[in-house]
Length: 180
View 1 (cartoon, rainbow, N blue to C red):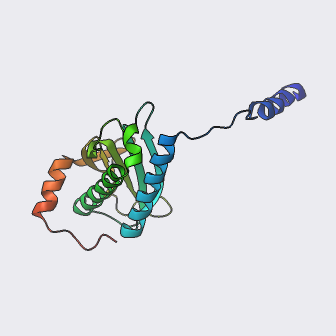
View 2 (cartoon, rainbow, N blue to C red; view 1 turned 90 degrees about the vertical axis):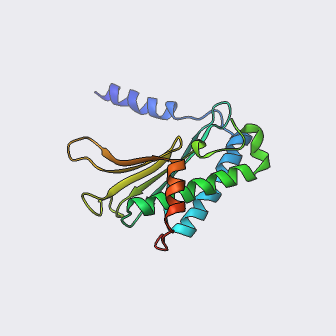
View 3 (cartoon, rainbow, N blue to C red; view 1 turned 180 degrees about the vertical axis):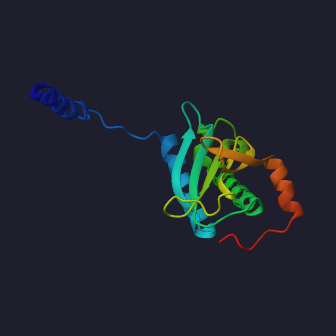
């Protein structure tokens, strides 16, 4: 037993040794800077709390991702406003940065290249309302609004619309002042 325990300890210490240091590439540095800027702007303007970032950028930057926590209940209309505002802000910042353009899979960057997820929950992770929205997202140019699914493992999509449909909805209905 001592032998196995010793092997585990030796494996942990030897396996965790980092002999090379990873350095971010120029496109990663630029993407991170833009993502951070947008996350802070959205936090300041709408009170959403940044909780995750990501992207798809193996060869070229194809997609950038931001996730937020929202600490108040949202309905579909308010969620739509937040998602569209976040996507537009992100697209605008990417396209305004001339240094990142050579690394983009397509320029100008579009709504389909941005992924935004908003988790709607209390600080302890509980939901505000059993029938209310718990996750809302913009991904691949489609906005989805989800609730808990009592019969399934995760969530149930209660409404879905394209980004263009969401823009039309916002044009036809005045914006709410209750975003923050």
